[in-house]
Image (cartoon, rainbow, N blue to C red; front, side, top):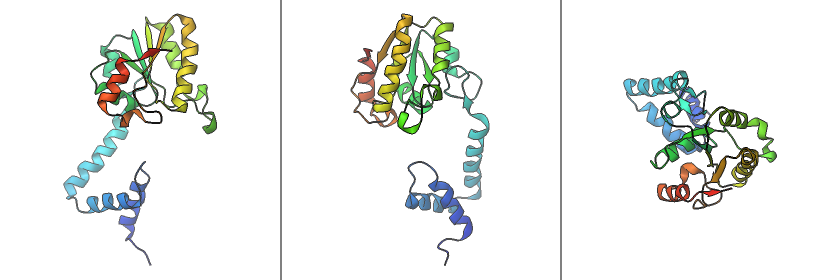
Length: 197
């Protein structure tokens, strides 16, 4: 016996593919959609399609952008580059209003156990930016976990011989915590107290 009629079952299945969404949450989401007005459902689906159509990666930093170059790269000095794992980390730091430099999104971290090496993340793009610009400092803001630390150390060792200051966020953030889940006070303190690698 089928538990759900086919359209609801399919919608639950699609919601359950999202990270952190279990079977019960997917079911709640699906029932919410069923109870939406047709206009609300159209706005919801249009928002998803709009994101897929109009959001790209910035050609300079790799952050989300609606244009070839994001607003941050277009408007700020590139003397200080904050290196992060993912675009969502840019948002976490931007909320602080403490940093006025630019970003470089690696789109991952070095993780030999997962088969991810230095060539699998955008380290080459960072080195290209350093060689082309007037960069004075690189701030390593990868997550304070094993992979984030290994990535920070690897990149730091590549950049230090170039005579550029390399700093790391201070350890106000607990080890194993993702930046997006850190509270703003802890993240702000870690940012202010960053240290040279």
